[in-house]
Length: 572
Image (cartoon, rainbow, N blue to C red; front, side):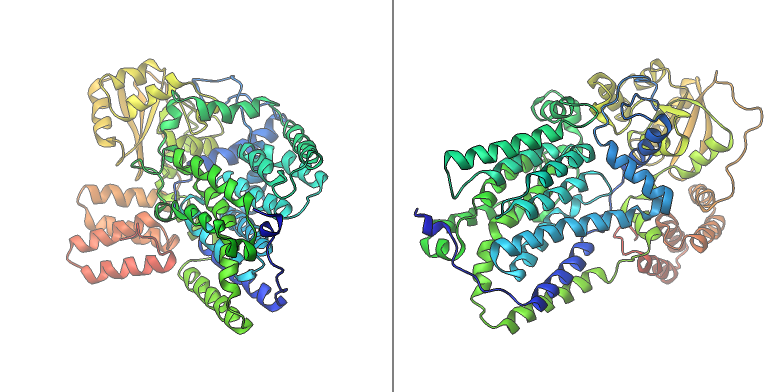
């Protein structure tokens, strides 16, 4: 292949109005993909960790939230993300984290779009391929620090794809990235691919790329854990025995359970389109996107190993496809036709966005599944100033940290193997699955309290088993979960009810519905919806009560009103 064949044919500059229209359409389209509903269990402890960092005044953290690892070193390699979370929520409230999420998503894919438009010579190709990447990645776009890796990857592509980046800017990028999210390690691999002199392979260009890469590696060592931050992702990647790799979100995409990206199963075959670059006619128009081909191969292998890498595969695939899309769109000589296509993309983005609210509270309620957390149980804990060791549902650990600041210390939580060992996790799984002897395991752990969901992981069976054991007694039951206490734990002489709130009213409605008290359940659910019109639990409970009373039209009207607040498929 000659050097001439590797370089694309010169492209005419595109008008500013077309580039602006594509950027506007892209921003709205990426925002429309920012409404993924997912239980944000890790988000809570990240917010709490930001508060803990300020309270302790040190970046070298030890555990203060569990009773199994109390005082142990905690590899909190995302400390800067945590500070940003806490600062954001302190200024504007936790519900406004949806705005943080949307801002990061739009910025990440806009940077990708700009890089693609430059590499393909087509603003419209940049929009279409970045939009495809956002669509593939959408199921994984939850409120977590991993969004910073997408943002920084987009920034890296904007800085380094098809141009010579400034070393100082790249060094600064990796100083920040390493302290935001563990995805910096992938970022270093991507940097190696982007810096490699694919089109000018000489000792001088290799040496220059190596020096820049080494400077960025050195920059990434500027974190509280030093080289330990490098070892963590390697240990996670190569330790097949780690039970934490069996967490559903990290399983291969072909395995059942966990997050699903239907588009991935279609576009995992799209890298085969890279074979088109074997045609000299294609190479003359597009050149060869060596960086896109190498990044796509790398990230596809990563994504097939773990579904959590699908978003970076989607962004990498866009690099491979954009030159082909640009060449195809280049056949449309009339700018008016390209403008029309950009307008169609804008209308499509607006239609996608139209059903969703921009108001923070209802969006937050659904995007992090706020309705699945035991708000009223924790209200009860705080009203009575309860303290001690609690064996709690794994996904609720971070929520307890945020609400109680260590007053209730958990057995395990979502910090996974940055703190806990395999034996602790395996023991928790035995309890979660109600394996024989699980009650004895809870008691042997030293737990004084037991906090579990009502309707998940055999919650009802667990409650009855603890009551039969004789060493436990019920303390409080809410809509989402119940709190049990060991019989020998000293409690306040008079236990206070949680303060009045919509969450307490919803618990009353749920309990009344369980007892067949439809009138009470209806009244309480309506009170909740008067205060929180988007409350998912109250919506479905009220509709269910009305339908049981053969008031189908009223129940359907409740669901319709709730879906106008947020069009969740879980409201039915």
